[in-house]
Length: 213
Image 1: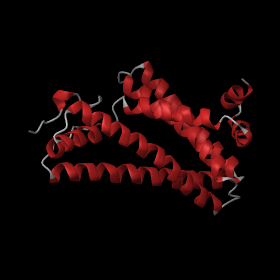
Image 2: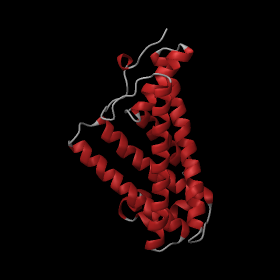
Image 3: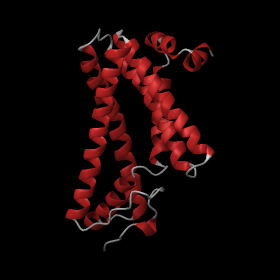
Image 4: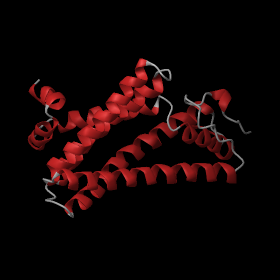
């Protein structure tokens, strides 16, 4: 209960206390649950649509089989991404401050990304321009604040140094997302597959995918 109050009212103290927390499996379990929910709410739709088409064309798998395989691939990718992200933050932050424990950093970033995934999931499930959108935006902003305090506490940095490290991490994330989107489009174009419109707001259904025999 005290940790929950610290998380809401004093996130800097929360992240400080997190280094002694024994609830790391609970933290990672929460992240895994939110990652699974996010895979079911529709993003990135091009990954599911193009991937399902590719598996149908070259392996003859049906839509349901393809979606489950792609969901597992995305979950593994997200977990691996958090691991590598913690390494990037650890090395960049070490240029400005004290590196500390890499395991504790991984734990802190997991909390931040769990809140971020919750925000994305709520946005995907709710109608545009609704209260769900406002709630999602609030959670994403809160995740940014949590990320700031997590990095500041991990490396014992001042505000300016924390912003520099956070900006470097944000650029790395944006670059990774953009490259992955470009790769998906290139694969689709090279194999004559259909790329869904960016405005598509749901996970592809069976009728959205081209079936191959």
